[in-house]
Image (cartoon, rainbow, N blue to C red):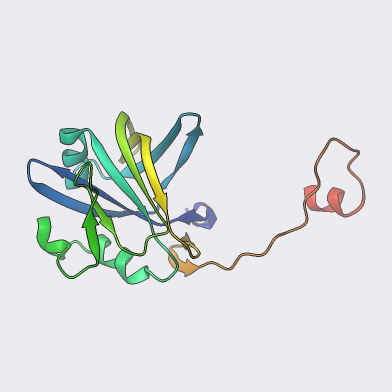
Length: 175
C-alpha cells in the first residue's frame, strides 16, 4: 500500500442536497475521467450519507480545495463533526443559485455535477458525475501525498513535443 500512497491527488469536498438535507465529505480520490463531456469520478465509502443524498437528488457539487483549506478538508473528514446543516454553520459557504448545493467559499473551483453512473470498486463506491456547470477561483491546490496534506507550488518544467528520437537527457529520464 505504501507505493499507492505516492499517487498524488487533489483534495476535494463533495457536497449534496436532497429533501432539505445537506452533507459534505472530504474526498482525495476524485478526478476528471473524461473531457468531452467532462465527467468526474469520486470514490466514497458505500455507507456515506453523501452518496444517499447525491443518488436521491441526482446531483452533487465538487469543491476543489486550495492549499489554504487543509482545516476544511480535516473538518469534512471528521466523523465527529455535526451532521446536516450544522456541519456548514461555522464555515463560509453559499448555496448554488440553481441547485441549492452547498458551495464552499474560497475554493479553487466548484463543479455542479449530474449523477451519471455508479460502480462498486473494492471497498468503495465510484460515483460518476457529468459536469453541468462550473466556476473557478484562484490559488494553488491542496494535495494528498503519502497520506498527508500538502500545499503546492508550481513552476513550469521542460517538455519536449513531437516525435523525435529519444536521446540524451530524455533517454535517461525514460529509463
